[in-house]
Figure 1: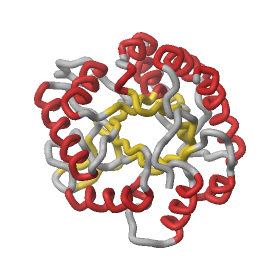
Figure 2 (figure 1 turned 90 degrees about the horizontal axis):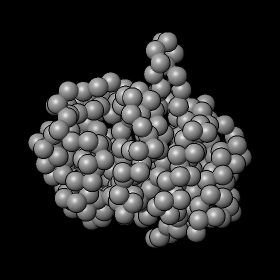
Figure 3 (figure 1 turned 90 degrees about the vertical axis):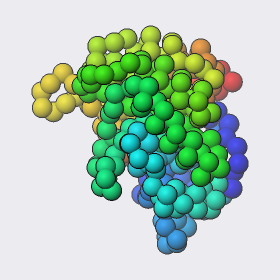
Figure 4 (figure 1 turned 135 degrees about the horizontal axis):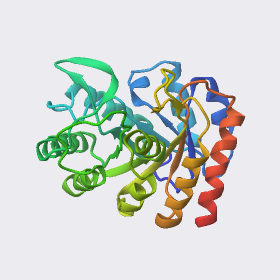
Length: 276
């Protein structure tokens, strides 16, 4: 298993692509999965992940720790996640800045919250519990925004920076989330990225988005299309400022052939190599 990750470009690993992923020799290639799909004791899916991990670095990107909830992360979930980490030895572990569980029920979404001092303390405590349980540093992903919430007393960059300072965690900076949130909420995506402290950024995500089919001028973080040119432009300017970082191409719907995804990934790899 790989224990370190160069600042290369990776892909989200899909079951239909296991064999091609395993066999691919592209320079700098790594793969990311949602750990919830592999937190099991055995079976073919987990066996494939272990085989791919013998040839390529792996990253685990969680979707259900619910770190922004008003309760601690589920202890059994953390135990199973730690077992998977011990088994496949990922080079990166990340989670979302959101909540998805309430009174024992999980909701199929990553839900927002007001950025307050109370929320900062609660989420910092939950991140620290998670890092203590897993025995490692994690990265927190900036969310997508679709409507204005009342009660914010922190800007998002300020809030994420404070979480990093209090817990030692890092940031998974999703540039597509920045782009569509800036569009939906009416702020400047480039200014947001310019304000981000470069030392906090452990990983970058690039993904596609779509226009709300309901007719509103709203962009949706759909992950069902190629990365938009405007997002590529923001990415290039960011890595010119901060230097290369491990970068993932996310695609979760309308999955194209592996070769097509690899071409998109190769575009990110080429940009990273120019700056290395």
